[in-house]
Image (cartoon, rainbow, N blue to C red; front, side, top):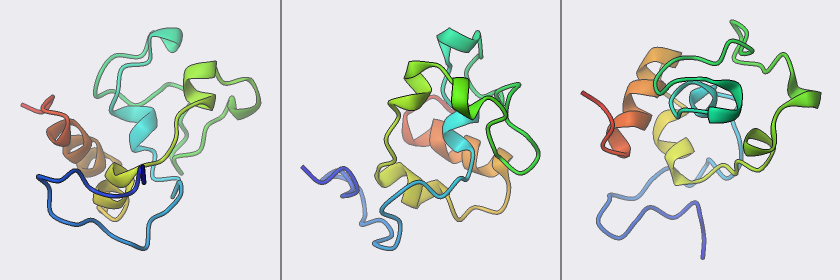
Length: 95
């Protein structure tokens, strides 16, 4: 299965995004229990450039995260807040 292909009920996503773009959405949108990070809040270890400050020692949940079609949906939004909002909306977690 191609994890970059949009689900059947979704419009096609960017074919240009096939790997992590470093947009920071995965470090801000989901909850990360291992870091006591709540849903929709940027990780305390994410810097202003959306780079992980504990990358070498990050927990396994972060190490195992794989970019997918959602990255193509959110990566090009202009701010981390907009990327997080869209990420949560995709998963039905937005307000």
